[in-house]
Structures are given as structure tokens and as C-alpha cells.
Image 1 (cartoon, one colour):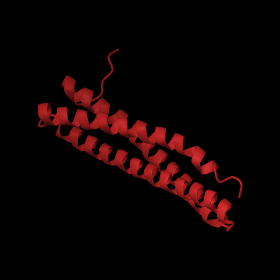
Image 2: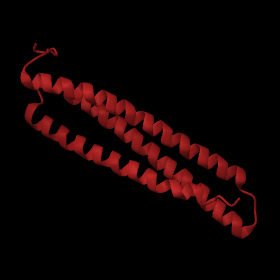
Image 3: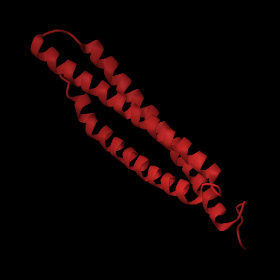
Length: 138
């Protein structure tokens, strides 16, 4: 199999996804620390929702780590099979498929995170302003 390098070329993209997700985790953790310290009683429900958001981000990161491992195994197996003349095409295909599925699942989790983050942010602003319902002024 001559395309053993394909899974390795996907890894930088997965690395960027991991880095951006890690930045989201760090920002959310800092915000949670501030909210817990300053406004725990007032924003208890918001804090709980943000903790669930943190859990989503952690699941996405685990998925990206799993995909990285699968892609590295596929590339490594392909590279070794070229030198040792054994057929590992089926294993490589399975690892690539698992890696790509893991990336897809992680991206879906990040999409859910992003969608929910808007609602949480809106509720947080409303509570900070003392409003319990979203109102538009005409």
C-alpha cells in the first residue's frame, strides 16, 4: 500500500482541532472559577450548565486523541509493512475509518457545544441584567 502517509498528513488538522478545543476548555475553566468565586448563589444554574459544557469539550478532546492514535497506528503499520513486506491493508483501512469516525463524532460534539453555548451566554447576560426573560425594546 503506497498511501501509508495519508493518515499521517491528517494529523496536523487533528492537532489544530485539539489545540482549539483545549483553548476552549481553558477559557471555560477560567470563567467557571470566576463565576463560582463571585456569583455562585446568583448564577448557580448557569454554572451547572457550564460544567456540562466542560464535559462536552472533554468528550470532544478524547475523541480527537483517539482519532490521533488510530491515524498514527495506520501510518505506522503502513510504513512498517513496506519495509517488512507483509500485508496490513485491512488493518490500515480499519484504523483510518475509526480515526475519521472519531473526528466526525468529536466535531458533532463541538457543534452541540457551540449551539448550547449561545443559550447559556444569553441566560447569563439576562441574569446579570436582572431580567428573567429575553425582551426586545421597540
